[in-house]
Length: 318
Image 1: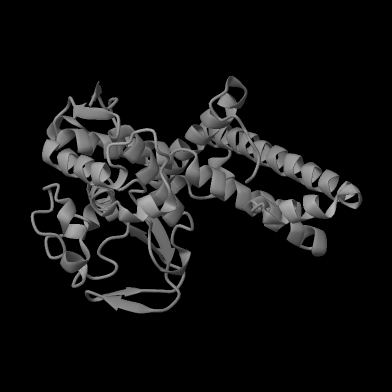
Image 2: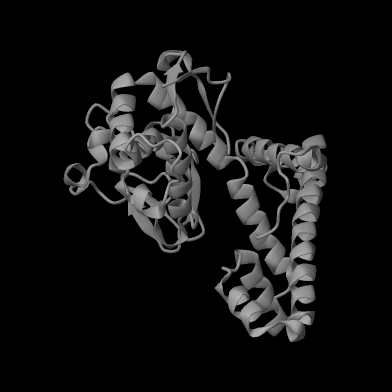
C-alpha cells in the first residue's frame, strides 16, 4: 500500500488480535447455520465481539488510507517547486496500489473512500498472516527431507557460486527451478488457504443432484490436492512432480493453492517471488532440521492452515 505500518510493533497489536478474532468468528459461524442471519448473530456475544473487531480493522485501514491521501496531497502541492530532474526522478518511482485507487478517487468522487477501504481490507487481511504461515510450512518440509534440502542448496550454490554476500536478483529467482517445485509441493500438502467459496451462476446437474444459481460451493484444496488420479503417492513429498514435463497432463484445476479462475489470488506471483527470496537467503547460510515427524503435526483448517503446536526447527550454520 506504500505506507509503513510497523506491523511488528506493539502499536499495531490490536489490529493483529482483531484479524485473528474475525478469522475465528468466520469459521465458527460457517459451521453454525442458525447464526447465518445477521439479526440473530449480532445478538450473540460472539457477534458483538465480531462487530467490535470489524470496527478496529476498518479503523486501521482508514488510517492507512488517510496517511497515503495526505502524503499524495502534500506531494501535489509541492509539485510547482520541483526541478525537471526532481520530476523525472519522481516519475520513475513505482506507485503503490493504494495510490492508483486514490488517484481514481480524485478523478471520480463516486469511487468513494469506503470502496477503497474495502479493497485495502481485502489486501491487508489476505496478506497479513498467509506469508508467515507459508514460510513456516516450507521451512518445515525442507528440514524434514534432507535429500530435498541438499538439492536446493546445490541449485543455490550453482546460482551464487557460494557467494553468500551477493544480493538476490530477479534473474536469480527465475533460475530457482527446484526451489519453486519444493514450494509448490509444500502448498500441495499444506495449502495455506485450505478452502475457498464460489457462487453458482447457472443451473447444474452433478451426480444426479440439481445445483441452482445462488448456491455456494465450498472448495477444499487440502483434500483436492490428495486426489490419487492427479497425484500418485499423494502423501509423499515429491517436488519433482511439478517439473513441467511431469505436470502437463494434469487437469489445470487439480492444483489450486491460490484458488483459480478470474477471481484467483492477485498476489500469487509476488508471493512466490517473496518466498523464494526468503528461503534462498536462509539456505545460503543455514541448514534446517525439522524436529517433529509429519504424523505428530496436526493441522487446523482456519482462514490459513495452522498447526495445533508450534513447528519445531533447528538451524545450524552451513
